[in-house]
Length: 165
Image (cartoon, rainbow, N blue to C red; front, top):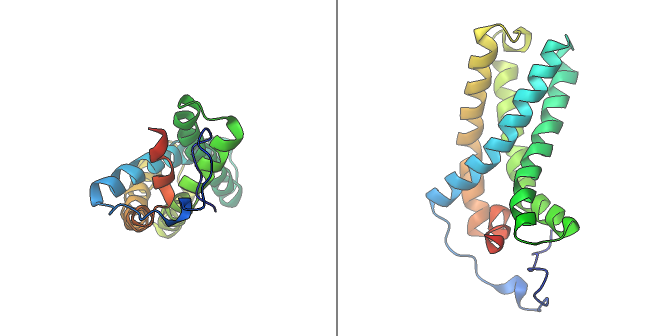
């Protein structure tokens, strides 16, 4: 994915050669918490809807994953759109900022739920449902934070959003 310039700024040939600022753990934690917020909203809504409707595990997980991406991208786009960026550019920024982070987060949290004994068959009324979901978010956070630190250090991921804040 190419580096996205602010829409009002002309694209220059040196745009790809700016050295990335060193990324610290606090920046990675903030980026991961931002991503986790959108993913968690999507996951909870998807798991709750699928479980309440009595869907099997696979369609429920698919819905939760799709909604995690939708809500994750939406949270980023909301801030970028507020900065005055047009919708198409905001979509591109959200895709560049969040895709890798959401992929790692979804892999980690869904794998955790899949291996947690009984979690796949728990219902909304079961404490196991909520405990396994909360644990999956903790695991996703722990797995994704180093990924975000690595990407931020290279000017990727949430680094592309910083110019709009």
